[in-house]
Length: 477
Image 1 (tube, rainbow, N blue to C red):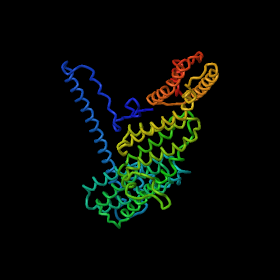
Image 2 (image 1 turned 30 degrees about the vertical axis):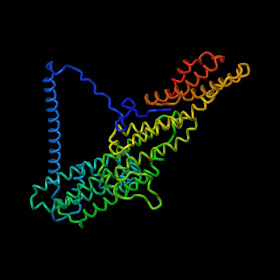
Image 3 (image 1 turned 90 degrees about the vertical axis):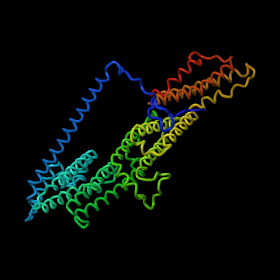
Image 4 (image 1 turned 135 degrees about the vertical axis):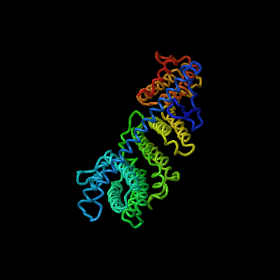
């Protein structure tokens, strides 16, 4: 049997990577250029562009105003860092300074891991919110120090250096707190989010204030980066070995539909890409396998190969879990649905840019194999009750045996239809392919049997046309 799984745009993903063709461009609607509408369209474009420029200008002005406001706050707090040093005044000024960026909580870094205000671990969403706020605060803070340094009076250079060092030390506490969190999928995202700001912003401050390698802030930065790298690599190992297998509830859908974990994990893999630089430098340059753990077979090289590797892990777990679906053919339908869903989600996102050549075609071949496996498991036993039964014998001696064979065929077919009518194939293209495949394998055998045995009476509702209509109701869920 021949199947084509090169599904086009109607099937849910762009098939250009596997040899498919793009849909033709839609004809242009509306008035032509000759009716005078072109100038009107140009005016509208100009107005739209002007609105965008105004929006950008307003946004830039807001950012500049915000930076100017922070600079004025800094000048007001700077005296606390001028000689003579007073620890209490400095601590108060630093607290007020960080609070102005909505980052005062970094001074109590234990809050990320059930500290004084926590009473238990913070939620994944709250950790993500704090990391996002920290990234924004650090970026703005770095701009404030850099721009203010350009017009700083000599008398304030030392005080501002002390002020910047205290701010940097406080902000670095978050990096250590993230690295110390318990291993989890959300920890890997947080680690990648924090790594780039630490590796980019702090060297700028070090050059600005002439902090050498032995300066406490420089030492703390190196320590934080090493901790982040180690934490991310441990999370990657755990992601492959246990998180995908056990982090999401694995209650199997009894209709063979797409498992909810596919949407969860494919969305998670997309989140990994929001920091591709971190993904490459943290996970691309080192071996994160323990001595007791062999590298995964055929794992793509480089940090960005992690995407293909993790998708393969998800597919492997889906295969393992599908063994719980014992009804003949349901396991193959489940894998067909989930493989198609994975391909759709990959091809509709930036994940497709990081997958190796031929990745889609490999999964198309798998889907073809799932269809063949489904037919062998679900319909080959049904068809075999009639197939090969065409040898002519004396009508009187063989009529009863033929009737029994036909009766067994109808019983088996009805059992299969009753079960598979409740199975779910959400995508209409896949559903159409599977229905057509069933029809093309069952109906010719049935028609041939009736032609070769005209003496067999066909009960009402069991004509070839009625039987074909019966098969068209499969997979409605």
